[in-house]
Image (cartoon, rainbow, N blue to C red; front, side):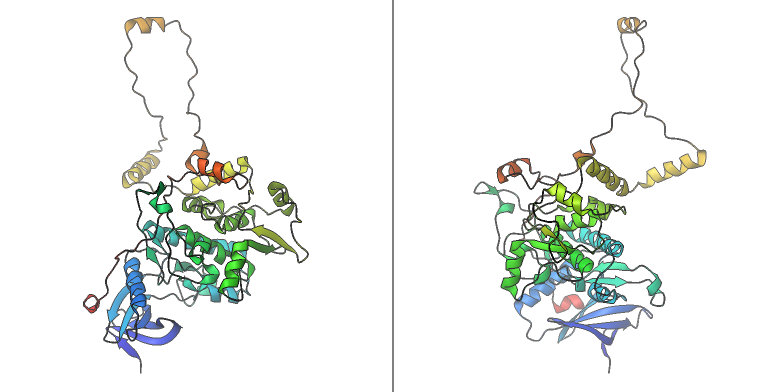
Length: 442
């Protein structure tokens, strides 16, 4: 017999985890619409699990984005809590990768990563950290069940069970910004995708999610995890060594390798910042450059062979590689800026439409010139006219971007040039986000 809660009918079990089961469901009020119903037992629920549930619901209610699985409704009975989500008909990325034979083509990975970044941008904008980004927590949804083999899916970030709201901390403590003071944390998330600072229970920020972006990108492209171990201690040791490899048989662009390396930096201070993630050529454009091993060796002055006897390129999570010349970097940043355009206002749209109808072109702005005295005007009569530039000189495209720290600089110099104003660090603090009780679910 099918279980029913309110107007929702649980048709079939589609997944289960440590804290509950997920059912494919329908609604008597919305015929034809499918839902994913997460059922969580109240029996023997610990205070810790209940706190995670509170936090998950509170954060999900803040989020509304096409690339995030939407929480539609909440219900409760004497024995269970029910979270009703939109249903995603394409499964998760882990299943998708297996269907592709274990390794996913880079152009498809790029399509996926762009949408994950878009969803995660909404999460970070709401001052939250996901903390558990992995392939099984990223879902796919196709517009139609019948034609999904021929359509591109919408990629959606899900499972916010370990997510945490953060508060920006201001002030100083012992000569340091409070946001720089290490704060121990509980061990949460999936170890294979967990940022090193979470592994070591150190202070962390949004950059913990950026590390996880690098790990899932690596897994999609290579078919296995970036770092592994026979147990938690062995995994932690391998991550701390910071050595990872890419098969020389993989066809990857320079943009892909650069973005992945920027995400997979052990030191959060060296890891790419969120603003740079959004503007990185791999995310902001569709153009690709072929990766050249010889150029990789030359630019980074690597003394070892570019690949070992097993046929792998060797990389380090302790080195931020430089793949572009300054000129190339300027061009790519300009391309990224052109792609990310600010939306026009309604008034601007009306003016634009009017100009198109009247076939008018933009005219240069008129300037108010202060009146001159007669003496000045008389002196100016015989003075030859100077050429006035039609447009002011272009602004330096580098000015709007934080440059990647040079890995060859020592710590002292690095601290002097580091710019922190663009993206302040956030320290996780306890936050009362949302209180669950039975009254809320009625």
